[in-house]
Length: 156
Image (cartoon, rainbow, N blue to C red; front, side, top):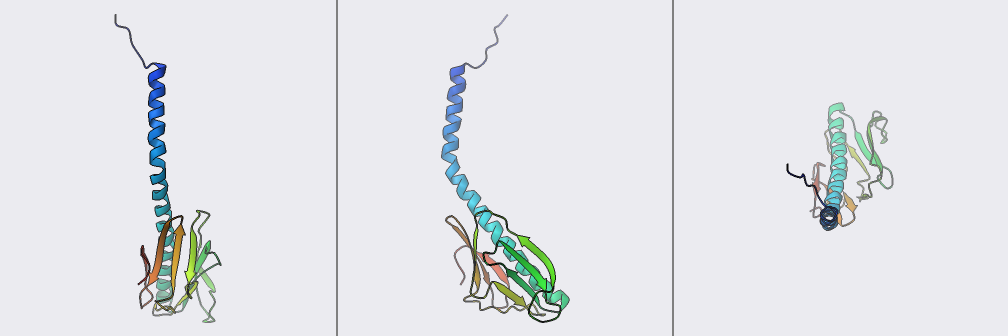
């Protein structure tokens, strides 16, 4: 009859140490991946909310407003049902949460009003969003018609 062997304590400890070293080497690159994904996801959330405001303006044939608070931890899309420049009928409100992402509205991008034809009140050279986490930055830029897009290297 053969004797069944298992792992010795020394073999098990060496295996655990090797795995710990490999994890320690992989963690910094994984952190960068998480930062890039968080930044891109936040930029895409802003992009989709702006596109929603644009489509609501066209669908309702009345102005729609995309706006956020001072640090853009929350933002909303609202229809301007009485044309007074304020969002009367909130379509969606988004709370970004605390992911360590910094959002800056440059120019007049903090409040974007789309008219009933889907055109925005933007200066495409100065109005954009900067989304940053650690060393990762994404930009939400606008075309001359007010259509938003996400860029890595800045707005042109």
